[in-house]
Amino acid sequence: MKPCKSPNLTAPRFRSKSKNLVNMELLKKIQEKTVLAKDFKRQDIDKIIKAFNKNIWKEIIANRDGVELMSRLGKIFVGTCKAPRKENIDIPKSIKYGVIVTHKNWETDGNLAKIFYTNKENRYNFKHNEVWNFTAHRDFKRTLAKTYKEDWTKYIKVEPNKHFLQQIKTQYRKDRIEEKMKAVPVEEYNEFDMS
Image (cartoon, rainbow, N blue to C red; front, side, top):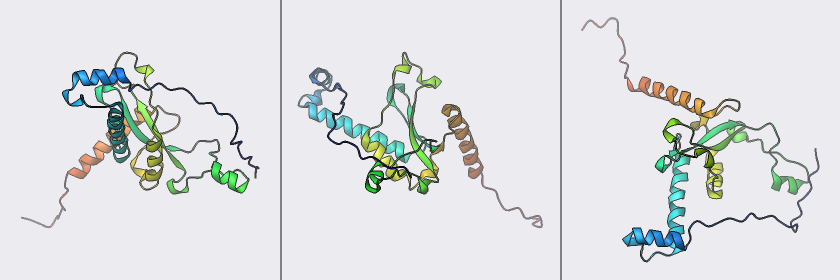
């Protein structure tokens, strides 16, 4: 058992600076284009954006196939992956017990949920698509962590050494074939029935 050192909570922290895209310039543009937005404040637009994004990530969690973003910006979905080879340390428990404690994910047979974003398919071709990336919101990650344990088998399995787009396409083909097989009712065959 390896001993665990507790972190220095009073140490200086690095905080990256971020730029808020919802500024007065954007607010004026929205007010010019939309009559209903004349009385809007910046906080109102923030609430609308947060509510819209919340609805998207709720749909991503609920839907196995994920969500295709508007304006052909890409697709976001949740995949089931094997646990990484390196240790996944449970920091609060390690500090509490004084030794390194790792997450084992017993509820999901050692599998993890990962959020994937892709814009590499042919239908998402747009200029400079390699510049776009996706970072999940903290609420999205936490909600996924809670709900993933309950129904982890519904998400697409993604193998570590293969390109995930090809895996998704083959999985969709298998699912379509299974749906077609279930859709065709097979009547019971009776070889002695002469009618």
